[in-house]
Structures are given as structure tokens and as C-alpha cells.
Image (tube, rainbow, N blue to C red; front, side, top):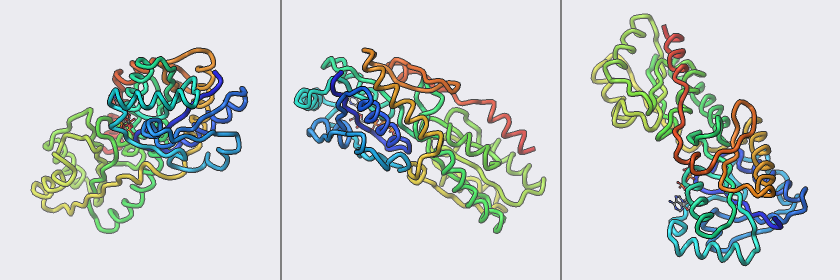
Length: 324
Ligand code: ATP
């Protein structure tokens, strides 16, 4: 390995900068050139690159987003696009590639590796925590803290006005953010894609809490929850069935992706960035660098993409105990 390329792809997440910094500095440590690819796979197609020296990555560990910028590239999904991307690899004499992103980025990286025989190592960078083989993805911990802080603020209004708030958090396919923030803010109910709580059960829960004297209520709803068609329709249904409730909806949206990374995400970015470079040096490829029980571990990219992640159902049970 004489030259390692690094890119961030898909949705940005806090901690990506920490991983880029670690890749660049580990390369410098081993006397390897580091080539940063700007705007993900699209930048690879357009030969949008810059050499990353130790000092190029100073002052970024505490910054959200990604200093290399990210993109979604439809062109890279085509054979022709990937051929063009490989031209950039050849022209820049890149020997291995670190892809920081989610399952889509890993799918693209894996196809690229198999088509053009370029070693690819992945670092899980997504707030959704939906990759198999790692207990945490980069940005997930920060997103939890951001959402928790935001919902705490919403609670102030909920209490002052005796309102019921439905707060939608990110998570189209996975309820990790909803489940953990829900428990952290003391939600009355947590609605996630993995468990279908029926409208009837939800209404009964609200009736119970009203008769127990609860005046303000927060329900945390993951984007992909199937109890209502969407969070706004769910609010309408609740108001129809329980006219005494004044229901408000708050969608946290993209703010969950931003902000300065937590200590955990900075450390994780550093650990995974270093390990990604060391893996390429050791001729390992087609793997994702993750973490489990505090230890860095490696999972085949194909498994990381296809494997099923599991939420901790025990947390749902515990949330119910907290709401008796
Ligand atoms: P997030 O979880 O934040 O959405 P992601 O990595 O899953 O991140 P995607 O938009 O799914 O985000 O994928 C990022 C990019 O990866 C795509 O824009 C495309 O360039 C590439 N990619 C995704 N799927 C494929 C595929 N099947 N073949 C080739 N490239 C792909």
C-alpha cells in the first residue's frame, strides 16, 4: 500500500471527520500517501481529489458533517460510472479505498471492489445504527444526544400546556433512535418499525395515563413506524378517538444528523479509521470495521449489508415499567 483513498458517501453523520482524520494521520504514520476524494463516489467519477497530509485534517475532529463532503451518485450505480471512477483510481495510483457510509455506500464499494479488483474497507457512518456487525455506527450516539436534548425542550411546552406531543425521530427501517431516546426522555409510548403497536393499544395506554392523572404526554415515533400511516395521521386518529387530548406533532428531521460529535463518536471514528488503514496494509479487504462490547471487530461487507440488526426489545419492556 503506497496510497490509500478515503471518501464519505450517503447521508453525513457526526464522527465522519474524526474517521477521515484518523485515516489521514495513520497513513502519515506508516508513510503512506492519503488521497481524499471529495463528494463520495461522484467525486471519484469526476476525479475530484486532494492529498491529505497530517495538517490537512487539523481542527476537524470536533466538527459535524464531513469535511470531504458527501453525495448520492446515481452514475456510480452504473457500470459505465464505475469504469470512470476506476480511471481516477488508476490516475491517482490509489491502491486501496476506505469508504465511510451506510449500507448503500457499502453495496457500491463492494461492487466496485469485485469489478475492478481494488481493495475496499468500510467504516459504518450513519446515524441510523442499521448495520449488522457493529453495536454502534458513527454518528448514532451523537444523534441520540441531539434528539434527547430536543425532546427535553419540547417537554417544557408539553407540561406548560397539558399537551400530548408526538415527536418523530429518524429511523425508516430501524427503531434504535426512537427506542433509546424514548427511554431517556420518559416517553409514554415508543413506536418503532420493528413492533406494531395497534391503534387500540395506544389509545388504551393514553386512557390509562389520563386516568392516572398524567397531564402531559410524549410519544416518540420512529419515521418508519406502522401504527399510523404517518405521524400526522396518527395525531388525527388520536384526536378523533380522544377529543380531550390536545395533540401536537413535532418532526425533528435533519437536525438529528448535525452538530459536534459526542466523545463516543470521536473515539469510535479514531479507532475505526486507524483499523481501516491497518487492515488494508495487512491485505484485508471487503470488510467493515465496527465495534462490539467495546472492542473493534471486523465483519464481511456482504454480511454487514445483508445481516439483520436487532433492537433490544428488553428496553421496550422496561419503558412500559417506567410508565406504570
Ligand atoms: P445512509 O444510511 O445515510 O442513507 P447510505 O450509504 O446507505 O447512507 P445511499 O444513498 O443508499 O446511502 O448510498 C450512497 C451511494 O452509494 C449512492 O448514491 C450510490 O452512489 C452508491 N450505491 C448505493 N447502492 C449502490 C448499488 N447497488 N450499486 C452501486 N452503487 C451504489
